[in-house]
Length: 540
Image 1 (cartoon, helix red, strand yellow):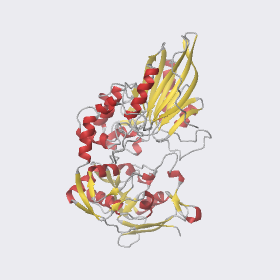
Image 2 (image 1 turned 180 degrees about the horizontal axis):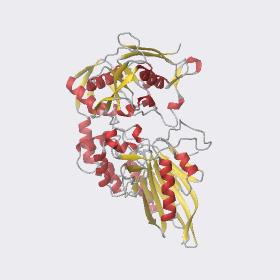
Image 3 (image 1 turned 90 degrees about the vertical axis):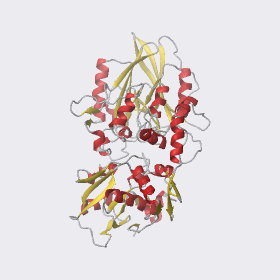
Image 4 (image 1 turned 135 degrees about the vertical axis):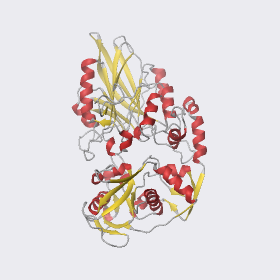
């Protein structure tokens, strides 16, 4: 499966009986409007403003093209976070999509991160419909966001149907309060139901499915890439659903363009690093259009592509305010709290992760916590701590939940964490490939504070916890109970931590983690780097 290269051939209607329909797709923009990652002012080949330049060029060649966003649009950058918390007007990502005249959008899982009010406002401010077949009103069973598809006529009477659908795995990650009143039906079954309805009732010439989900199998061999939980079902959609011409995917942040079971597929990465493009050839026969060919490719952003000035200007006020806010100093560190290597941070106790766990324990009023290094680009804290430092280390608006867990559940969770590593060549510790592809999942490795433990990676998976004790050195027995604080994603079972599902909830802290950290640093002024080395990884 290879990424396509941009065609220089003009896209035109060839004759009255031949046409080409062009579909452009963005996905997983995650609030990246500007070509920056907010750790520095360096221009990078990403962001919706650069993609906007590419979109406008494509429109010059074909004004009848379709433009679709595939979800995870409003969350992910300090700009997006600032806009949600402090700006009353239209979210800048929504304003940018309005300016670019998007035809439709699909809610991704991260659209729910800020609660229903924020999502409802984003949808109300949009000049385009939000489509999702599988998300329904729990009481009525009706689609939660209105009709889940749109019919649009383009060119010489070509009827195009756009059906949206979202991974149904959201309840495994999201805070229950944020999705109250919603039911998440199986995405594959929802696509089967609605494509049949659309083909029968609407009889479109071209059917596009935009799915905020990814591929669970190798696109060429069909071999399973991951444990088949249902989080990603794109391969099954291509294989089992009849009548689909184009499938837009996302969620996994991969770069994919090609065909699977005669369905043209794209997945344009994340952060605005690429634009998905599908060209569909049609021929008019007997008074209607017939699909005769499809080609998918990725138009990759580069530093040589200028950011669209209109999009930059549109968000400039919010961006300037966000930058000023980010540069505010809120505290200092005493000692070394930097993360020099994400791998080393996960191999041995690190002062930054210990600090994160201590913030969680302070907020929750408990003595046991687990936390993960959320981002491979996280650098921890230097001598001066700004809001930028906080948000670049805590990009997800996770809240905290305290669960009452038995010793057996804690052991099971540590065994799951231990699968992150394996013994490689020459008995050297290395990351399990299952955490690297098809999507990197380093954030599913947890480190604990408030207990003592040792993981022996040379032992078989499921039998690697060789020490599990209280801080006082007493063995934690299977029946013993402890109150443990963790983020809501993990408490809901995210990252294959199934053992947490259904466990008693003692307390919920609804302030997101970035704010908790900022408040903690502001209150203390100076935070001290400490490390009690309560856990270790070994290869015996």
